[in-house]
Length: 338
Image 1 (tube, rainbow, N blue to C red):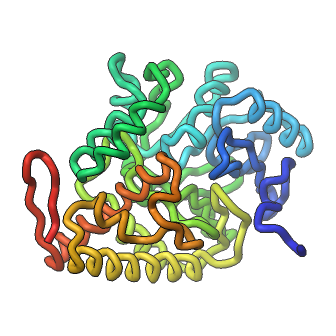
Image 2 (cartoon, rainbow, N blue to C red; image 1 turned 180 degrees about the vertical axis):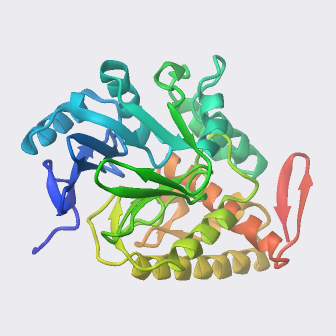
């Protein structure tokens, strides 16, 4: 078969630049099956970009990979976390409890963490609200029947340090810069090592898939508008190597950003067309569109991906309203577009 597009998931520590190792860690689902964290050697200290999901298998794989570069979890001085999704943030918290590592996170993630840490929060509360707003009652009802009980809010904690603007992070021997890139989440950060030409991109720019938009408990009014602006922000910078959270390292951030911008342009056109053809809600529009690179029908998706499809469609509809391409009105609690 040649090089598999899944080869990047193989466990280990892989040097991608001098003093920078990519460490894939496992995830407990069939979609995104691994997440890359990046170990940056800096003098006698070790910095990790992202932490992985707090799972025993992930902890074992991280420990084994760090041993390959002569380190262990107790050597991690700080975690630079791109965003507060479970697969990026929670293992940084568990290792902080044990070893005292510093955890840094974008300040706009505070809104979602406050909801996640609320005693009465339950899994996907905000997504269920949004499904109702967008006319997707069948998806909402099925999701309610299968979602996990309890909030599991005990795994969530605030970071040590909030980053609320472009910030230089002086390490011992290296210079990194944190750059807010809202969209995937409202507090998403990328980390730049500009002298080395590296962008630790988190989920902002991924080589093989289109990142979800606004999948969080406290999204902004228009996550897709934010995301497109953040893509243009990094496109306006000098090109760098892409060090993504999911997928292999590639040579050009710009090439992939151009593809993502073109994808969303095409998706906006397709979404407007299905409304013109009669779809009124995000649910109806999502059912009229096709999904994934295989162009699957909405009904062929599992309930989680049906939810994601409705919310992505809603994000595109909201941008079309902001662009005055469509109008919207709320009727009996449901948003309708025309």
